[in-house]
Image 1 (cartoon, one colour):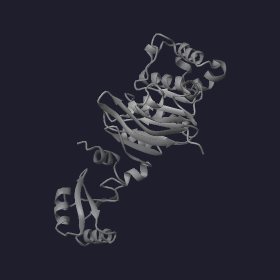
Image 2 (cartoon, rainbow, N blue to C red):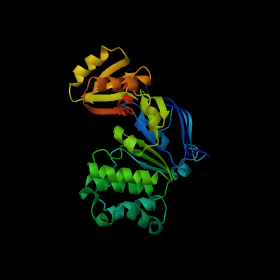
Image 3 (cartoon, rainbow, N blue to C red):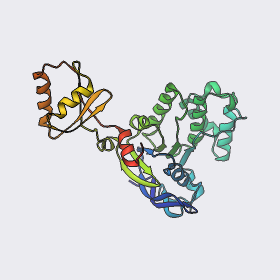
Image 4 (cartoon, rainbow, N blue to C red):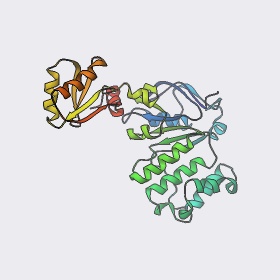
Amino acid sequence: MTALVEVNNISKSFESFLAVDDINFSLEKGEVLGFLGPNGAGKTTTMRILTGFLKPTSGNIKINGLDLFKNLKKTREFIGYVPEGSPLYNEMTTIDFLSFICEIRNIDKDQNLGKIIKLLNLDEVLLQKIDTLSKGFKRRVGLAQALVHDPKILILDEPTDGLDPNQKHEVRKLIKKLGKEKSIIISTHILEEVKAICNRTMILSNGKLLIDDTPTNVLKKSRSYNNLLVSVYDKSANELKKELEALNNFKYIDIDNNLCSIKLKSTSDASFLSNYLLKKKYAIKHYSINKGQLDEVFRQLTNTV
């Protein structure tokens, strides 16, 4: 299968500042990629390069097998882009704006707009000026303009930023639905968003690509992955930690949300611990396995506090 997006050794410098440093990856249909990184990591610059708004200092990009910058008009037909903040023409009504987008893309609005309006539930705001819409509806209009030409690739910069929990849920549900038929790249600071909708995760820092894997495999890099989480009614987490540390049977013990987070030396130590707690007649309040924390991996890799 030909990758819809192929990024080959792209770098981007702004005078002496290296914003993107030799990044490589490819993306196929059905992949929803979560693009993570601290502020200034190079995420937005990379996305602007992918959409043809910025030329890389070095490297090249292929979109659906075509060189992006040698075939800019053609390759942009395959891409739908929602920049951060979803900038719109606020003085226009929703229907006028979307009709305008169809016109400049030279596509038939009668064939394309109906299904997009239905998909994004925009019927009730078609005649409203965009300036009067809620943030949630503005996001939907932004998505609508990116989808009217039915692109194979969707690039979304902070698509749920500023939305309330219900609005976030609706946008995420829509992205998951679209992700079955398209390649989607999402830049986000919201780590829960990656777990909710992405099947692939990339973390950037200082312009470098640090990790590219499934969310499940990224979680396995968490220091707390596979740790036992234990609390008992009889002792505080701090007291229980001191007592268990004295046994010297575990690699380390941390406090995690008033639970003891215990890294085992071997799998047999799980039985040892449960037997110990029963022998001491402690009433177990919580006993589970930690599946890892994405924010923990993020901090480990990007050295943020």
